Length: 476
Ligand SMILES: NC(=O)C1=CN([C@@H]2O[C@H](COP(=O)(O)OP(=O)(O)OC[C@H]3O[C@@H](n4cnc5c(N)ncnc54)[C@H](OP(=O)(O)O)[C@@H]3O)[C@@H](O)[C@H]2O)[C@@H](O)CC1
Ligand SMILES: [K+]
Image (cartoon, protein in one colour):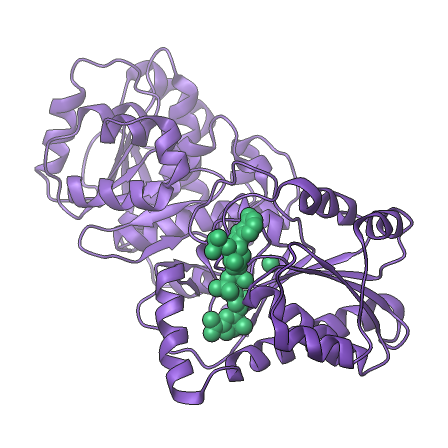
């Protein structure tokens, strides 16, 4: 699990640490860690550190200070270090250390020419960190563009221009090959699109003591730990029986995709209890599916329903069984007011906006708040699907993220498959939160292992292979 903390939490932890160890110590720890990563990357790229040329894009605050102190350390190892100042202001002690180590200041024209000629081995983006405002503009934006693809770009704490806690940059940002972040990961580094701007994220410990994170992201190892692998003695009920009411005469494909998700995720048995026409399509594709109702351990409702007059009563009658249930897509518009925590809702941004009575833009601008609010209001667990997949539970402030996957998995039909996987996991006994994270992470890990694009039904066919690889990972 990887945790991320918001700017106020980090500021507070920094203040506590500074009161203990004194001013300046944290910055030296940060700069030392940054220099180690920069040196390692230089060595990997050019065989040695000495003789490399680096540029520190230096902002007016402590982020600039980190970059200058790190460059001074590198200069003492034979690196030729240059700085360009974003404003006339600079961290004065760090600047003195930089100059003493042989660092030199360059003007904009020289910097742009040398970037274009690929004369810098590395550009350290020490413009702005957690004190930054969103976006890079003017000369800084020209340098950010000039550096992209022309040098190894290492961002200090976070790429300049990203909002620490906001996930959707509305302006240009620095694009880094790697980000060296201090004390704790920041929310923008775990969520898209910031995640893509940050490149490989390396965490340098500087001795901050932090409490509960704001975000916690599953890694493949968490998926491996939580997956309900079948045992030799598992019968169909131990592996879980899923009742699927998905699809309609108009959208039979949704039923096939949802059932496919459950089947390939290893459900013990799938009962199809939905529309008759959709059911024929399902049985044709999956003869192992039982087309009648009976004992189930979890349900999936809503994917591909379209407009269905009995939507509300269907959801209510399933709710009355007291069993866990995934409600997806069209079912989300017909929810009872208050749901039990056994409900798992799987909206995309547009569906979540409708659920909250707001606009899609607003959900996309602050998905963490949106998913948290939806869980609180409904009482259910909510999985917000998209490039980054968020899971919130009622009464729990930490929002969890699934393993990050490649962008191509965001395609029509992948939500139906995902809902099927989640239902299979509920039936196997996982709590809704882990079923949501497990389903979304399985799709992401599978897509990373089998670079597509594939249509969702083909990706699902690789699930069993991913699951056995996870089991092996667990055995070590
Ligand atoms: N605190 C600690 O213990 C430690 C902190 N550490 C490091 O410090 C970083 C935080 O430092 P920081 O607070 O000085 O803020 P920083 O990100 O350097 O920028 C602030 C300055 O930039 C300005 N500014 C912002 N955006 C702008 C824009 N778009 N265009 C122009 N100006 C803009 C802003 O101006 P203002 O918004 O106030 O007008 C302000 O003057 C943190 O990320 C980590 O790297 C580590 O050393 C570990 C110990
Ligand atoms: K930065």
